[in-house]
Image (cartoon, helix red, strand yellow):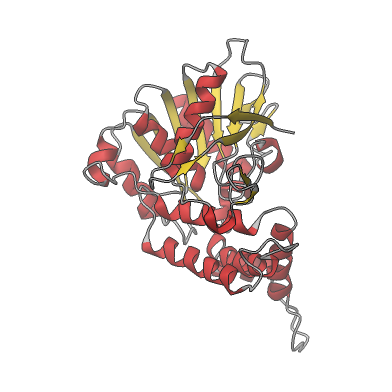
Length: 337
């Protein structure tokens, strides 16, 4: 179970709304009283604060983020449903769940919550931040917001600003959620069918034509229904419903859309040009959400960055699946620093 930091003070969001108080769920793998290098892992869209649960090929004893050698911290992001304050949480001013009253939170709000936790834990330096997709957004924002705090950043399958293409996928998922008549109600299992449909849409963006052709082929037996790809989509939807909150999914996707390193900072190029953190940008050759050229474009604008392409049939999800290939890329980069 994660630790919970109860922050009893008002939290001002970037949108101008105020949360009366917030909870921050987090895990520490190691002992912060021991002077080991500190690695902060930032989770992606529906992750939790324990990377051993969802990234065991990269984080753990003997892995790239070696929990025998490093102290590791991971916090559940603001707006999620794994212990941190989100739409499902009780609004202390009403005694009821926030639901549709939950404010828009952004990547910058998530990083500000991380800062509250960092100061609570007494961490003065982060040797490495690693994250993919929404996790990479956090690492990039934090590198800009706190110059000199982070020595190295691993920026996986992400961009400097959420593209119209990504926003369109996210809006389609939110439309699926809102099409469920129980969404934003407090009935049991509210929004579950909408979340199933939203996840099925999301899976199309996380994988690609090639992935489904290889992993979900049907035998040439003349069948007319119950195709593997169809049952796979339903399985993925059901799996997420069993572990995630529909209202949190709605707001996390809105936070995803908010990502723009250049907002209020003179644009993307100017903002990236100010980040001095040593950075490895990794793309996946079959990623349709963040194509190679987008990730490489981030590396081109960062003063101290390298870009490497990971080959994988698994598209955006390659970072979760291709553990050996990704580890080889990460280790090679470390050796060049």
